[in-house]
Image 1 (cartoon, chains in turn green, red, yellow):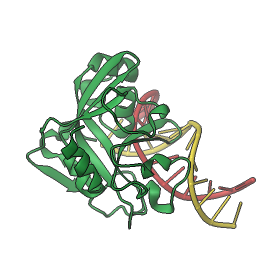
Image 2 (cartoon, chains in turn yellow, blue, cyan):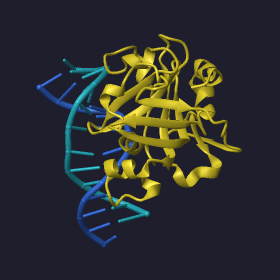
Image 3 (cartoon, protein in one colour):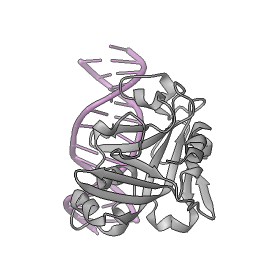
Image 4 (cartoon, chains in turn green, purple, cyan):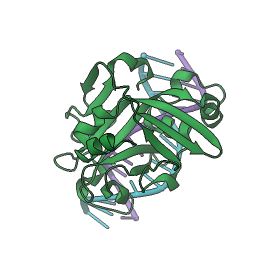
Length: 192
DNA sequence: TATCCGATGACCT
DNA sequence: GGTCATCGGATAG
């Protein structure tokens, strides 16, 4: 990722979450390339955010959320689905941005081979569990920097949305009122 | 040991 | 469009 994007990640999840809209996620996993443009994110903060996995301090599960900005945080939810996050803030702080939806751009056949032959384009990466599956992300992708040449990369193409919709986060009960969900207003069809 | 917490897909209507 | 079943991880008791 660019130095400018990394600086934005270091500045914290609340600023990084809208900044990540338009950034591309590329995976090279299992011999297949898959690429999509981020259209929906949620910020999870280190302070005052009861819904954040970091709210009660480090555990084995959330350890990578306390790594330096630019690391990947992958966790299992509902005992079945994986969620992909980009760590933000300072090392040891415990902030991250959950990537909730992508507009699929490349490798749609690989995505469909992972998601199911009958899944339409719109449902390939709409939702955090779906996009992790479509990109081939696995539990081994938890932790470590998202390095160029690695399994997962972020590519900043300066494709920032012209308008951003801000609202409450989805599927949480604690701190549910905070306006920390961000969507590309011109790409709502790809959002969850 | 029990209870809470959450995303998705299948099935139904 | 609504309801339901699914399960690992964390915390409380």
